[in-house]
Length: 334
Image (cartoon, rainbow, N blue to C red; front, side, top):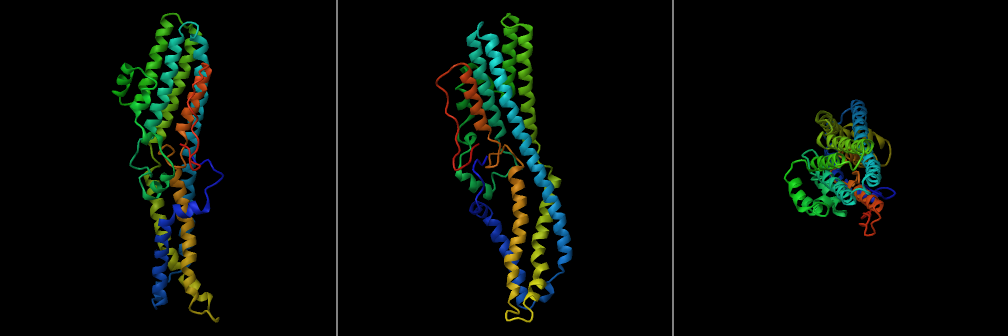
């Protein structure tokens, strides 16, 4: 997540510079050919304007859907924050007097669940954008923690060796960690360490965690529908290609009867570039937000949120050796 006041104009231009180079070439080719006498290349601008209207609608639809996916992902992790705090103090107040070691163990297992979940959500998918040159270059400004360290290294800080090996043998580690929490809770209930009401309260929190995990996995594993994504790309490409052709005659007529007659055609290049860059960049902004767990600068900061939860819960147990909070690097925090 970008935590600064705004993306700077220089950042935007640098981020889109590859597309700017291509758009300049696409605008320059018909302009040069028209200047050399290929007047037939000019096409009426009206049908292109109609196409632009359609492109604006579909790009706007895509950006709206992208923001909805991003905001839903943030709401999911907002719920995890609140439910984790509730889980922590309910568990502490219910079990500490009976078995403080079990409370500590279940707290640690919850940190492990947060860790396993964020590692699963950062796994790459073929439809994500972090492997493209445009996004990969910007990613040099920050580090994706889940790509720097390994899950087993992180989990050994929270789990015993036996449980660690058991969890690592499973496909969905986060699910199995929550299942272990449920098993531990049931054992405490059977031993009479917690009563019916306490068991119900804590179990409800585990259900909420499972529900939040499922919602996050749905966003992660179900991309923005490929039919909508593909038609947006194709229509945008057609519009970008035809814009310079539609403006040729307009800029050629601009200088009629003046000292610059015949030269105003060259205005076609910067103005075509401006129009097509706006549309292309709007589409790129939507594409940058459509996968909120991929590890881009526009992601939900699940690593920072997980660390915040761990600090809060350790504080509930009056621990003094708290892990440091994760701070932004170059205004980016993940």
